[in-house]
Amino acid sequence: MSVRIEVPGPVRELVEKLEKAEFETWTVGGAVRDALPGSPADREDWDLATRATPEQMRRVFRRTVPLGPRYGTLGVFGSDGVLYEVTTFRHDVVTYGRKALVAFAKTLDEDLARRDFTVNAMAWHPRREVLHDPHGGERDLQAGLLRAVGDPAERFREDYLRVLRGLRFAGSLGLEIEPGTWAGMTAAVPGLDRLSRERVREELMKVLAAREPSRTLRLYRRCSALDRVFGEMAHVAGRGALATVDAVEERGGTGAAGGTPIGLVRLAALLLFGGGAAREPATVAGLLVGLRFSGDEVERVTAAMSGGLGPTRQQIADPVARRRWVAQTGWGGVRDVFRVWVAALRAGTATRDEDEVRRVIAAARRDRDAGVPLSVADLAIAGRDLVARGWEPGPGIGRALQRLLDAVWEDPPLNTPAALLEMVAAMEEGP
Image 1: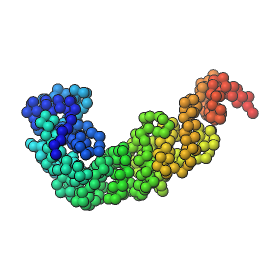
Image 2: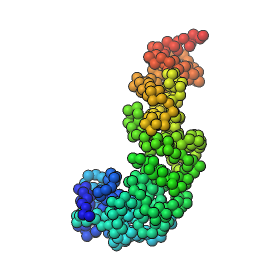
Image 3: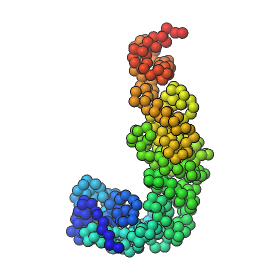
């Protein structure tokens, strides 16, 4: 089958510059795969493979960025200002299951032969408009198959991360895993324990950021990779949890954008709806710390789980209870909770009536838009105003400000200097 791949102009310029210096250069990897007919994915960043060594690349380009020169990879800026990865042809010398000792190769075929799956072992030459596909990647892509390059068992033993990468490719691209590849993959699952937790975490976050994470997580479960990633919480990937994870959207149901990455909110939904010990904050924190999530990421996930499976009756009926909960959780955490609630409504896994959930979300939005204070720092007066009235600095001022905040939560229009100072005067007079 004749194919033609449109390569961005800045990428073509980089290829032409290297080849003008007599260094054979090709576009490789995910961008080639995703640009072919039959691929359901969006194009990834464009990468180049070249016969030029890093030292030779530095002579060709005025400015390079050392992304991994030891492994032959430099970053080169295109005319569009984008940093593109350019890597010298390589072949493996020794593999350890977690990494490989590589050496520079002379030919493209040597480089493609060390790649993981046939759909990733294709190269396109934008000047000659030739697809180089020695392992049948285009054929497998058309057939909807994920197949290892060469012997599957050997390929996964070389780097056990390929197990997780293969599961992600199959899930996100909607590919069936070829039987021999599946056998080699499942046999290599115990080797996942040899991977650094950072690499596992990075792969998991890529899964959770994909369009339908459930497809990959089901494959994790089928081959027992879920046990290696989640340990005693491997049961989390039940039907309801997976449906809720897929339903989490990039933007929350509150209409606010940005904030916590979607992968972290989906992780919170997975753990929350997985049930059992996965709902215990200490257990969740232990899992996430073990996977090398940062302290901020652990806080975001546990905060997103803090709303439980829906608003409490008190939060629905009592504005003060709702405002206190928002204050304790922080608006960022509350927004993530709302994203989980809305996902549960969409997935049909919510334990509360939709109207109830929507009312809580709408009320919280109104409070936010009206500037209802979340803490004493948001009050219209501060501790210095009490000191100016003769109050002694100390915990008494903090208690007084908290009483004022409670009053404002009852009646938000009271948050004016005049009204608050009037209440302070009443406190000074005593009961």
